[in-house]
Length: 189
Image (cartoon, rainbow, N blue to C red):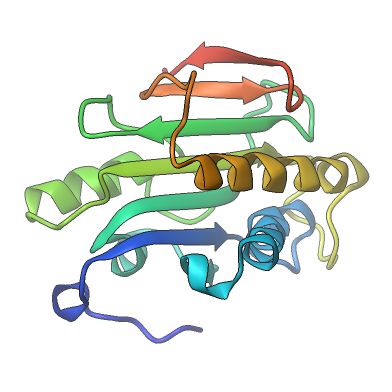
């Protein structure tokens, strides 16, 4: 388990990329798997990379003090087939993100609490996810449909980070990605 850091004493940094999950619970490890591929492609010095199996208030220690934050996680919505990719961008002007996960507290609640406490939140928070098929079976690999989607998600994240912008992405809306060439936007509920 990584040592907790006190964000008040940490200097402001440009980018953190966080992979959430448990790599021993099948598709729940998708966020960590994608993070490792993004780190390999971009290089260690491109960002602060964190592999975490935490949620709730401890997650704040890894978000506060950065200009931009990327969170990668498995999603269990049941609304789309396993392997479907998601992207959400939150900026100061956009509505709060509603993302419930197996990692305790809703991300929206966490960000609202941090704002009330006056924490230095990232100006841009990007959440990327992949629809999971199985997050309960003890297995050190993802299901076939999720495993096939992970390189595409890594491509998307690297492209977004390298370009420095998110052209065509409406902040405050969940975007469902069918492929790298085709996407549709689903309004946040």
